[in-house]
Amino acid sequence: MKKILITICLLSPISLLLCMETAHPLDELICTTNLDPYAKYPTLIKKNPDPVVNTVDAYTRFMETNRQNKTTSLSGQDRDFKQQYVERLEQLIAWQEDPLFDTKILIDFDKTRDYLLTEEGFEEVKFETDDGVILGGLLKERKNARFNVVVANGFMPGKKEGMATLYKLFPDFCNLLLFDARGHGNSDGHLWRNILWKRIHGLNEYRDIWAAIRLMNTRFSTIQSNILYGTCEGAFHSANAVLEAKKQDTLAELKIKALFFDSGWDKFVEAGYSVARQKLTGIVGGPAYYAASALYQLWLKGAYRPIENERNLPHRINNLPESVRTVFIHGIEDKDVPIQGVRALYAKCPNSVMYESNVTRPHALMQVKDKFRYALWLRQELEKLEKSKIE
Image (cartoon, rainbow, N blue to C red; front, side):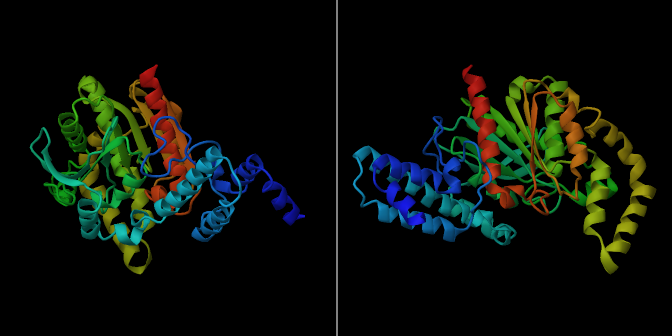
């Protein structure tokens, strides 16, 4: 029976194309967008963002079948369509196997930085915050860009190179800036001194994000749409950057159009406790957790209470401006930052959407572990912003 069906499919060009389109679970992921159908990475669109088959062997078998079928008598238009389809699958294989999706490579920050500089055309940049902190970043300029994307990293290790995967996820019409927050990586500042001695961590990090935006505005003055992307603690600071911009009436200057809030903290100290409980376990980690808890109670709690009141999000998220699209992305099984708190933020937040991933150990890793859907989510939201600009 199977052979008969295959034979029927090969009898006519139209039947062949229909067979090809429905024979593979990626058919709903091949690019048909009219915004930029030839973007560098294979654009993911349409109905089904969760491919059933995601191994190279399956893709290879599918492509080999279609290469054999190229000899079938087809009209020139049908042959062109089929060739483009196969080429897109080849691009998809190359895309999903890119080294920037490999956490073992990403964790080697020096090699990742060198790869971005020498192979992908990034440039190193330095810029200064309004309170005098010099920050380091990696900037990728793209031809015909319509958006600037500023990426704020998580708490630890919190280095910009760890988020290099986003270069393969954001479309080619986005300039991209990865930067180290104060006290991290190649930026000035003293993280642990600010946490333990000055006890001001979390108060001024929004200034880092403002400085990054201003750098992009200076470099790309004709672009009117800046996108903030934050993960883990970086999402918390990014939300505060938007809230401070509204409070200080700098939204128009900063041109913030969207906030991507990935694995983000809702409460400053509570999130820190949650992460510590997950990471500090066992014979060594357990006592370390209780020591850190005692340090907080005896030395840090009083100093951080005003910062929490000023920066925590549950009582302030509803103040995010309607003009900024907020995109929450969170893992259902995130044990570092439980999803319930972020769902509560989403329920209060104006002009927002929430995407949830069911991968295991998802915290700040969904862009790697759930890359097909992640690319789709980013692309969908940018297309909505593009459409709103046209309208």
